[in-house]
Image 1: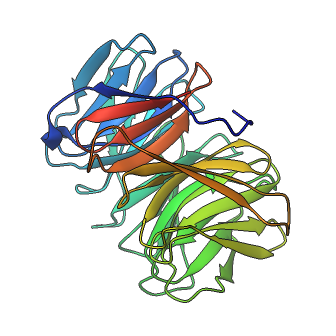
Image 2: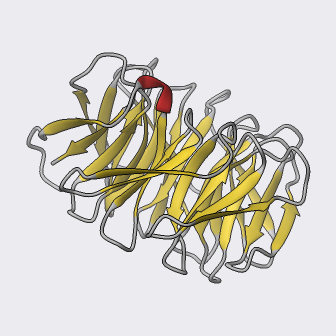
Length: 300
């Protein structure tokens, strides 16, 4: 998806608005997996649009971000009841309580060490859980930083956004933490992704897309609509990312070479107020977007 032709947007209705599709990821089984934040469920969607929901035994748990794990299962955060969940590709679920009470796990990603790494919104920590459910937690040098999304970087570290501390953080597998303050005050970074060379992130409060090199150089690119509230981001190539605009009901694409002018394109979604959240590259090479109003979007 590297050319600049207008994409085809196909919306797939899955459930009622209350189900709240939020996170989305491609599984090892060649299907898309979603969290249903409002319904306390996870779900599987094939590229042929076969949809299956799986209860996780905790309707009020708030499943949020989901990612493929190193064991072939999908791992997800349960932000409201402070667990890390796991679902196999045949729909069997289990959960592991985060040791720190009221932690608010949110972002989650596989790390280079064969474990899952996650953020804790409420306790200024980054956590690590291995596939056997053993936890390690690392305190961050901030107070009220609201660590949000997290991704593995090209340098062997884990990179994460600090929504309220206005910074991008990096933690090594040894637990060492480095923070990089953002140039724009009150930017509110949330989503983050690696393109294989640098890290890209969205600034939900500033209406900007940012890029940070592994040595800490930061660039920011203003969106045409600064009130769009960009939320999640995924890289499709080096220097190219797609992102969701939660408040503006759009998806966008940004292409930029280092320290050159960026090209930003935005596309209206078919249904008004559909609330786009998570975004991923699917097993079919298309982009897939979770729409909180009970649907997903396929972008080709």
